[in-house]
Length: 385
Image (cartoon, rainbow, N blue to C red; front, side, top):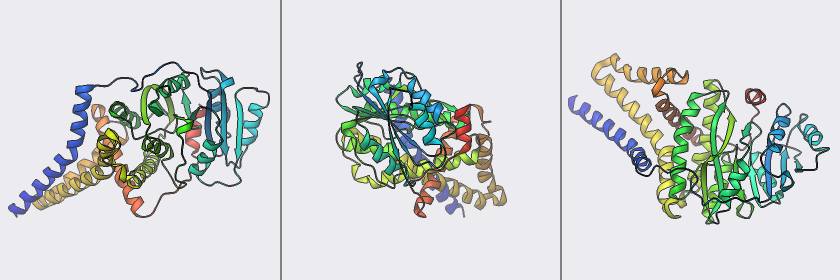
């Protein structure tokens, strides 16, 4: 019994140490280097811009989003808005009314007869975009006034083919999401200074039009997939914390979980499909991608295995008292999901992400995952406030 217990404890300690090692290495890099600002050689630039906006039944928020775009600090005579719409409500009518007496920006409206999924719609929109810089944004996000100028300054660097920005506020208020995204912003800044970042963000991403390629039609991580393929073709893809936006967030734990699970599924599947990039493409393939593989694919399974081993060990030694381990985890999750952990809330946000990644792995193994996206009235309500 004692020998078995020692082996169990040893295995648990090994799993925990192996799980945490890559994070400690990244933390050490952040502490030693502490990179700040954009990794690009930014200089003022004013290219022509195509803003791509996918829409589906957005009648409650489309006018607010278009108002947000036309009030950006950028000459609208240099801007076209490419909207690809598959709505069956009044979205198209409202779009036409908005542009009816407006000379600038110009409108290209692609009307889909049926919903085919987000990736095919975006591929059509990117193909229709005619200007030098192509920006992808979402209807339920709000952009800082200077985002186009900041993005253009990044893309003026000839090494940069794409740039994404930082979510500065979760509209609707979620400390869980904000805590994780603050950590993510530091990591993405580091990755961008090393070479390129992996994750790109749907609320705002900008691309050199000449660098754009098609994404897989079943993609559920279209922004990140496009950026990854641009890096694969030789350009760097970076995160600039000076590009700021706000994104609507779910207020309930269940809806946040569904949203995070879906995003996690897309990222995991993309990493697997592009696994041949590991070890290649400079520091991107030798450092950035391996870390994201660890964080998104390997670490969640090790953490769940550690919890399982700790539970088994506790039951073997203390009988029913061994249930204290899953009880403690359950309590941690219950308090964290209600944002009542104080200084430990950031730790919970990271753990919560690992849980979503684990759940996403299981769903992918079960064959789930397609390219359609569902309308959520709560997010529209948050955005319209």
